[in-house]
Every structure is written in C-alpha cells, then in structure tokens.
Image (cartoon, rainbow, N blue to C red; front, side):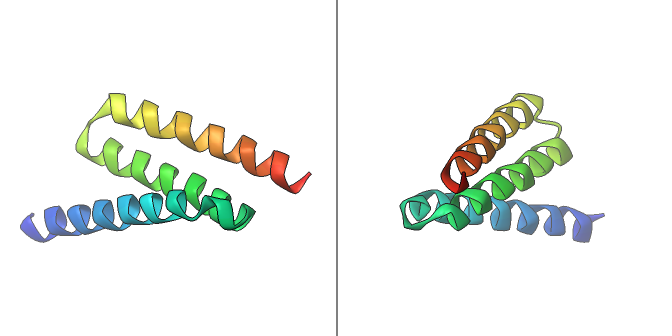
Length: 75
C-alpha cells in the first residue's frame, strides 16, 4: 500500500512539473502548448486518484483551453 502511495505522489510530481515547465515554454512554439494540454490531463488524472474533484474539473478546463489554443496555432 505504501509503495502505491509513493508511486502516485511521483506521478503527481511528474505531471505538475511537466505542466509548469511547458506553460513557461509555451511562447517557443505549438509543441509546448500541446504538451501543456497533455500535462493538464495528467494532472487531472492525478487529482482524480486523490479524489480532489474540483481540481479534476479545473485541470480538464485548462486542457480544453490549451488544446483549442494549439488548434488555432497550427491552423
């Protein structure tokens, strides 16, 4: 059980670190925008694992916004 909790924590660290890094690099190109969107989805999954439903909603909204921005950038 403890090993599972540690794995979940490391998954969260990875997801949030990726999200913040890609957000900081968004101006460098659309690749970082789509990576940011994917990282938001990973963060939403992490929040779901924790049972934090308001954060699931917030991260999902961020992902949708980022995917829409990505589509407008590549169009």
